[in-house]
Image (cartoon, rainbow, N blue to C red; front, side):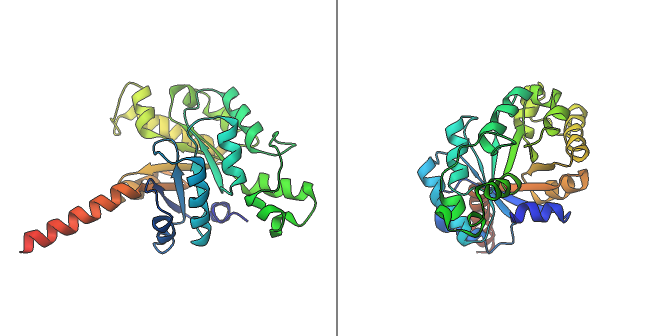
Length: 258
């Protein structure tokens, strides 16, 4: 079973991080940090499909579930990353229910969707344990163990969030607080009651329809607060920013002491 789904089913608090560092070694090293999963970001980093496939290999070596935020809701982007072995797909810029129905077709096998089949890395090219049964068993396994996560970062998505989370094939929602606040006309006002109410609406819709809710936190206090707010999972920080901050803080500490 997908370890991320297993933790969710066990009602564990799930902590992940976003990776922008283009390094297999950096991703493998995250396996020693205690983080539960990573999100490889193809939307806001220059990672290409071939590189992403290599980074998924590094994540597998580190026993880290890796979800991919694709750069668009394009069929090829979604299918290539699933075939490469992504534990889940995050799709940004959703604005309506029809778009979600379309990406379900790309990401899920029949009878839920219309995903095309080939013996690829996600099934060990036909030699992995999940591939040794019938084709129907393999497709059912993938449908249950591969996450499809629309990102709610627009007013349009927010207005349809109850319907979107009710759809078979949707496994969770990632909240994009920055872009959502921008689209609401309250850019960066994270304490604004309107934004807080919107986020609570998303979390409640997820809970009602038994779908995973995922937040983003830029610091430890925000991560703790988001779990208290009811999120099932939180993406804590971006590895490149944490890398810079770690060096900045250590260098400052040394220079202050000398």
